[in-house]
Amino acid sequence: MTTALPFLAAPRTHAPLQIASDALGLPILRSSDGTSYNVVRGVPIFVNSDSGDAGHDTTHRAAEFEEMYQSLSEPWKYSGRMAEVLRHEFVSALAPSVCPAPEWVLDLGCSVGQLSAHLGKHFPRIASLDVSATAVWKAQEYCTSMNTRSNATEFAFVVGSATELPFASESFSLVVASDGLFGWELSEAAQKEVVSEIVRVLKPGGVAIFTDYLGHKKFDRLFRLIDQSPLRRESTEYLHDRLWYQMESWFHLIQNTSFAKAILRNRPLALGLRGIARLLGARASKHVCVVARKEAR
Ligand SMILES: C[S@@+](CC[C@H](N)C(=O)[O-])C[C@H]1O[C@@H](n2cnc3c(N)ncnc32)[C@H](O)[C@@H]1O
Image (cartoon, rainbow, N blue to C red):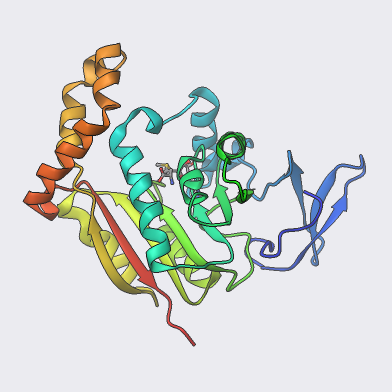
């Protein structure tokens, strides 16, 4: 990182950041109030997920997610589970239809970068944030290797928490929080902080896309969180993936066999199950997706 990204700001204070060097000559970001943040492998770090103390912080549970990424190469095995691949494709195809030309897209909780890479096929600049540094470095490697567009996508990676975003207010026209508000294992108060942080960093008229794995009886939890904020729900989509997850549960005990892996990775099968589930309506969805907009000035 040779120049500070235009939207970076100190978490909580939102003070502007300048690039500087520490006593060893390593790059850091320094805020106008004197706080400094490390930059490792070109990635600014706003959460210390390695510190034992972070494990006691119930606001963002950084240490727990970091540990998961250090011990497992791909914690949710998304790349081998076709319902998740279809979900990433669904969100990244929906995004340009609700926000056609954002300068930067913010992908919150980017994990190892699969959704960011999909978004990069549709948009020229993607900022990806996760609370785990290991996840972000994996995402950086993955998105760089997948970046095959002739007009290459610009990716920026940040280690930080969605509960206290290290970004200036009104920086983004599109924020994606995909598995997501409920997948981050936050208290209800922290979920509300995330929504208000998303509202803060959205430009007036900007759009947030939320997805979560909840099941139809709990979809209203997500609707309520959004309705309690200044965001206005514009549309709700159901991913019709319940039959696929039902099928996955049958293979749980033999999930590491090549037969089960082939079934879970089978695209025509996943599309077929989605087609049947669509006939059954919202009840046949585990995932819900909400598009919500901040009022234009
Ligand atoms: C279930 S994965 C979802 C990954 C991806 N967004 C997707 O849709 O496939 C949740 C990710 O959110 C990250 N995460 C958890 N708490 C977070 C927080 N407070 N702020 C930012 N990311 C967080 C986790 O480290 C994990 O990588």
